[in-house]
Image 1: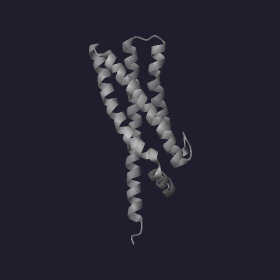
Image 2 (image 1 turned 90 degrees about the horizontal axis):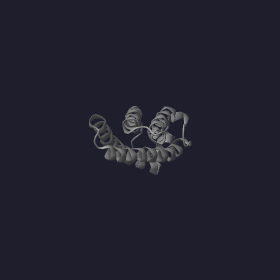
Image 3 (image 1 turned 180 degrees about the horizontal axis):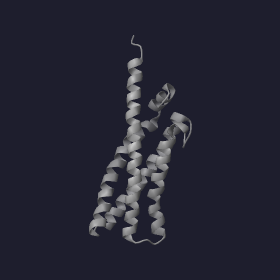
Image 4 (image 1 turned 90 degrees about the vertical axis):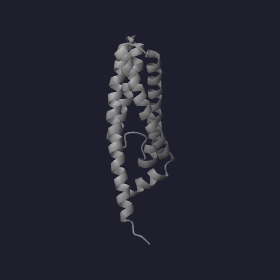
Length: 154
């Protein structure tokens, strides 16, 4: 997972705290937005509120991506696609591209239902990527606990 030096840099980075704050906020907005998008697709009602929720969700994924790049630089010395973080970055890249497909389909003149179906697809990629980050976080916490337990006590 992480070398002891990377763990130390991770703990010192101010971007670690930012990520811990923004990630649950993004997940909460994902749940809200997903529900509003599905509601619109099922009833045809609430397009405006679903659209606003999509904008907020897209802004949050960009905020997490940009601050995550600073975090990755602090920990691994790369802003993006550090070898140690390749799969997480690839998943994030796919999620952010699918989220931004929203703007492409609007530009292409797609109807409201198509736009919302594009967001359903984007939200599936987000869920897969979020699951990947959760797994990494759990493994990282176990690693940190194991390292602390192995430290000599004085």
